[in-house]
Image (cartoon, rainbow, N blue to C red; front, side):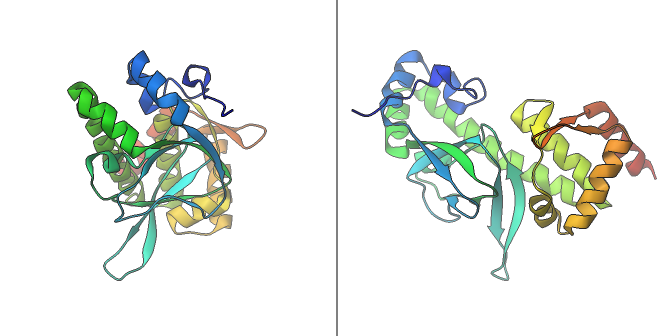
Length: 229
């Protein structure tokens, strides 16, 4: 007998896009939700394809990639806990980015066909899912802001603020130096030095098990000073 997932007992329930569903809608979904472990390099969704499922990150980190005019695929953002991908598929639209696991991660998967069926019965749900899809585009645009800052230290400070904001927590799991270096177009050594500097300045505090506490006001103050210079 297949185990039915209880969303109400999930650690990311309050941040998950399904948290705004009615009890009846959530109960209709739960028998069809699957949890999967994916590994570094595995794709959640592919750019240009209509996704057949919405996949929500329960644990781990993922990269967003876009293919440029030269045909080269480049990282354009990073996401973690509670980020959802594939919502454009509910509306029959192509996915604007590829999303690939940056580390071993766990995801929850919901068939697009089921979400579309629920949305067709409830205009308010259709509107909500559209807003969440648009929000995903807004999050991608925010990462472009980080890339335009001068200096890896400032780019890193902005990136950590984005991760803390999107996950809704001041303590985040720090991405690997390799992942951050790939995203920022620099070296692992530069990332390590920049993280050490941010900690020395009081912008972050690294904890055990790759956890990192983000001090928002200190990092924003750093960015403001950099902008003024």
